[in-house]
Image (cartoon, rainbow, N blue to C red):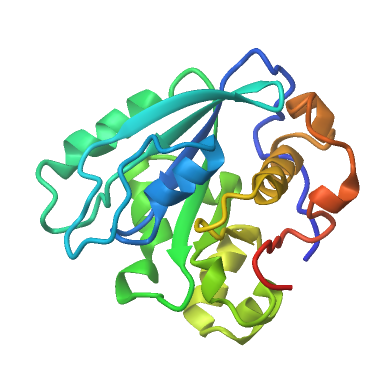
Length: 225
């Protein structure tokens, strides 16, 4: 999968300006767990549950590899049990102001629901922005993979393949049971490549060793190779 180039509408070149990562997806997909892995600590509530755990938007700030990162955790905006969904959407939009946003669309390995088939279009309508230009599919439950993530994507159903393609064929997998720094480095490398071709401009403290980064492929797996 070839890197598609800089982010449409401009590139990121100011490490003093917050870079915002917005976790989006259905309830139970692992948004909060991914946020905690990125932050390297338990910030967002994450636990197995038959009902949504995240019912409010929440944000956390951390300097990662020399750049201030804002991570936004969100509820499932389309969950029928979510009260006042329009309020939560507005809160998310307000939290995104003041910095460049990258959207992490979280999908669980081995689970792709009917609602996720058109989730990109519904999110773009709700948030009133073209998410696909700034999106990376972030798979969770990488520990369940018995193959490389590229093979999983190649053999998955056509609806998921279409969603990935609509997001520029950018995807990565996280194993949240093992919060290894390597997978966070891989994600930051992919984000940097998305918003600016010079990744050290985005993350000046990011180790330049290419083995930690995933380009020229967008995929990155730290679970099973």
